[in-house]
Image 1 (spheres, helix red, strand yellow):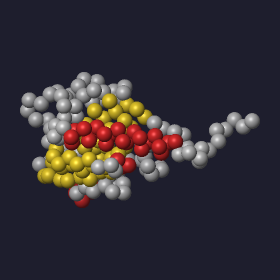
Image 2: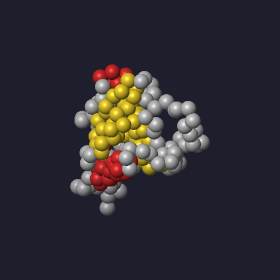
Image 3: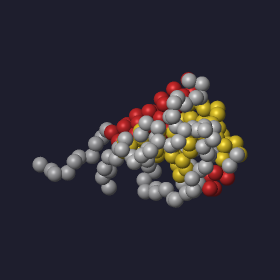
Image 4: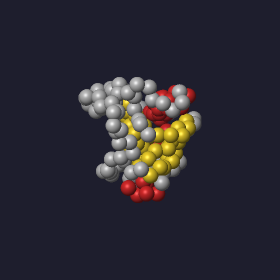
Length: 167
């Protein structure tokens, strides 16, 4: 008997990644159905590959974030449109409005720090490590907005799915 695990003819890792990315779509769909208002203290950090197929961001943002970028859906966003394969949303960057279109396949992380929930996804393109980037700065807290939740970034509820691939 062999000690090595046989290669699967069923792409389990791809199926699981797609299912987890569908969670993002469902959450955003509920926000869209609710009139675009986030309930309570909920807010989302969505990290995505800026150069992934289907991503549409202004050239200035693609130049500033050539590999990966994180957006915040909290206080100031508009025109949230959720589709089966991705979503589009309007955001302001340094007080300049921008429309972004992001396929779910481009998302690498989804976090809701208000409830200590997060999903982290495998990169869809092998051996692509993101370059260090500046924070996007698209959602500065407004006066009177709730303070961030303490310990929200400890990652205790981040779900990471990483199936080992044979090389």
